[in-house]
Length: 211
Image (spheres, rainbow, N blue to C red):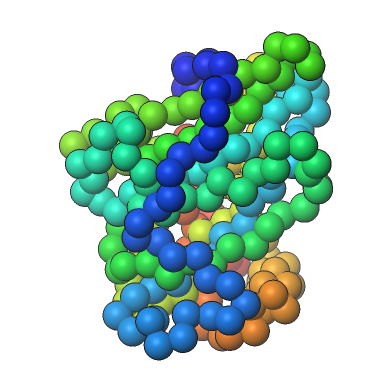
């Protein structure tokens, strides 16, 4: 799937323009008519991953569908907080205020290293995912007034080539523990209203609903 092995050259993708990342202070009065999406990402290096000495998730981007953007355009919602040097083996929690609608995976970057001197990255462009404005990589939906949990995103190393994978809490107790951790960082969050609605994908995760 990830057929674009390129040398790392320069920074990450330019800033997004629809999704607004929320901090501990919350959305304030701007929430009217919009939705909130929650997700977690691990940015640490994964060692001995497939054929590589180490790998690292570098960027994930989503576009509101239908999308007519070119490969060079910034995603509507962008996560690219991966540190270049020191990493921690933990998930970072994110909340974004977004326009209602359907969003699709549009960009993905994974750094790979065979050694200290042999370093590159898999960069999957928008044209790989977007066909007639719809993403083949996966989608999520959010309506006005909703708060939706999309999943935990990290790497999977089961094959020779690393891929991004969408993980999740497997029971309601674990999900509530996750929401409690998010609320500790974002006191404005009403955990009782968060919907478990995973990022839907056939490439980067399995279908699952809480029992």
